[in-house]
Image (cartoon, rainbow, N blue to C red):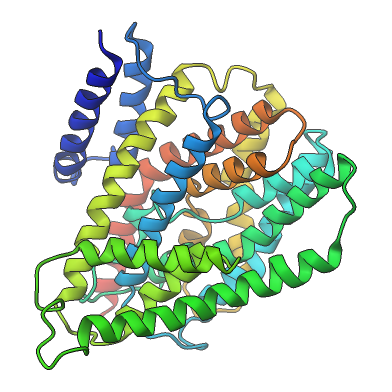
Length: 411
């Protein structure tokens, strides 16, 4: 059997399912990610000559595929947010970034050292890669397409957090890399980490995203008296925005993820009622589903191929605690004192989905430094992602519908 032809056929089936399944599953507790995760596990359990689903054997492919999926998702997230940017209007987001994320990273570091017995580098990496919420797999708890209205605080908080938390997680991923390099004999340069990885990469990403977003907004909407691009049905511009902004930011050694989200957000904030925003969002969403389908099949295949086989009971307890206790408690503490109801606070705290972003950060870090027992790190992170997909996926739709009904009942 020709492995290339078989892979093409399976990708075709995956894409067909990506277009069809979300409509079929609207009234069912199963979600698209759950179905594709199980489908990937089932396919790789069959005696077919499929490409190995092993991120440690193909680290570059794992890094680039997850990177592209997160990038496209961040563009879509930025294009969907209707709430105008403002320090007060985004107050919940700042709490999730400034309180919840650091608490989550510290909890991951502490549990990694005290419970799993990891060294500082590996424990910090574990906390850093699991701290960000995922923009790819959280569609059930995110805002609706641009211009549809009804952007409630819960969906807005989870969407904006997923868009911006890379700017806070990445410095700690770089710090874990620096600790791993120091353990191998390289000098630890705290000044370089602070000035480059924290200050420049973060502020540079925001600045580059804002400038390029504003320039692209003018090109799309204001470059002509009757802008032909904005009045077309061509959504390919969304992919162009993603790749251009990310490329420029990375060439300037800034955080490209942050730049892409900020650029998309700036574009969305202008000409807010224009129908072209929906066109851009639709194309970004289609690209996102394409990449998500492939990655979920591979994740399911990795599980079926034994990536979780080496887990100890301590690592299983860690994964359960991280999903069920660490994020909910850190989220609840971060939202204390807000005007949100208790149900809304707990919903935001609980539904911090872990997903493709965590896999990217781990692939990125293990590519830049040697960590002791990377197989154990991959097993733990994949288990957390699988648990998040299953637990959050099975409950998100029902919880969000209940919140919507209560909100309508108060009007």
